[in-house]
Image (cartoon, rainbow over all chains, first blue to last red):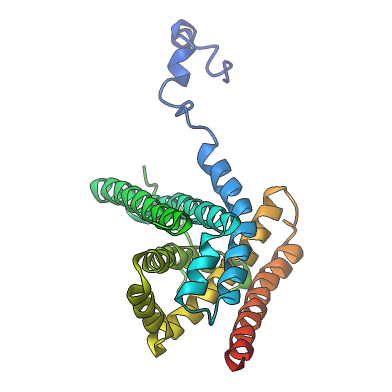
Length: 137
Length: 130
């Protein structure tokens, strides 16, 4: 904090340093958003390429073959990771887009909550479906 | 507080298009497209879990002319967001910010995405014969 601000001014000397920090400082989130966006991005390089190759390898697979492929433990695990990471990364990205372009506060908040609900719904539906395939239920 | 005296951000209609700007806009646009594309992925997995009838319906939909056009778009969006995403991760280390490097890496993302898309669909077409 810059404590030199107006030190010659008597009123400034009487003001507690907290006065300058309150309302301007940390929102207690720091670089979380930025960092998680990068970590999920790095994970999605690997998971996205794996997903692409897996889909291409199953291009002409019939139902039984495709289901058996997803049921393999490693494929099931990676598919769950891909779905969860993709939705997570998507929500972080969409959040920034909404914050940048939606200037009516209530619409912004509604959209921010809506994308989170939809992402959790989509991710859980995907994970549950993979588990059903993997466990054969 | 908006200071109306200062110049506003250059509007795209009066701003000379440059590849750095295109690569940035495309990253957002493809990101939004891919977010919507996750729904398709979940649809596919749900169909696979539900049974053969649902899976055949899913395949028929994505194999239709409209489905293939959307898949072409999504495959390019994925390719672009992947290439440019790697570029941004490299830039996050502080590298590549000199203007010539920045322009070069922008072109690399655009060209790389087209190459990757062509590779994907070449594989599909060759695999289609087998």
